[in-house]
Image (cartoon, rainbow, N blue to C red; front, side, top):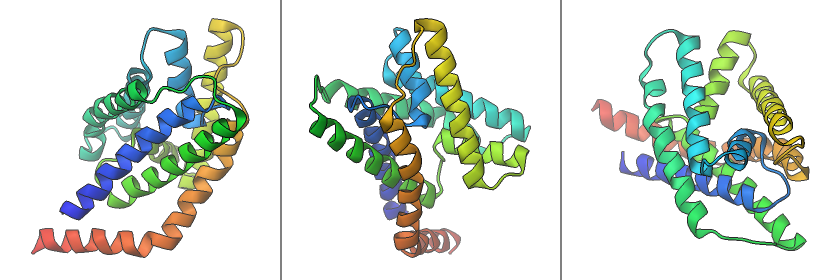
Length: 215
């Protein structure tokens, strides 16, 4: 159990780090992070608090769709607050101002890698899912779309919400750029690569821990 928990925790920490680095590159944030980012920019909320608010909305969406109590859904409530705190912790100490283009690209690459690796570790350890991923699963259940296509639909919805909020409050689009496009087409592919390359190792850890609990 200890190894599985350690991988899960590291995954959460990498995911939060990726979220923060993504906002520091000034090239556009990923679609999943776009709504928390724009909310933090137009309000007094910190980035972490905005993440918590959006994640809680994802959890409520799942509760409405499933219409029953699921432990893994309920546990996403405390996860949302802890994740928001971690994001604010990183954001407090990672201060980057006026980066040049090389630094922007480097930050974008690091952000994409951290997000992809973090998601892969969290999902494969199968404890409490990241609320956006839980939201995609719920969306998949009501649309009968496979997870991959439901993810595209979810990202499209998040992007549309970001554009609407931005235009209504500032008259311009906030947080969307070339980095958004790059993240959109690379994060999923990197996750697929990681799962293909290390999926057997992840499964062996999960199966070993599951057997230990049954014995």
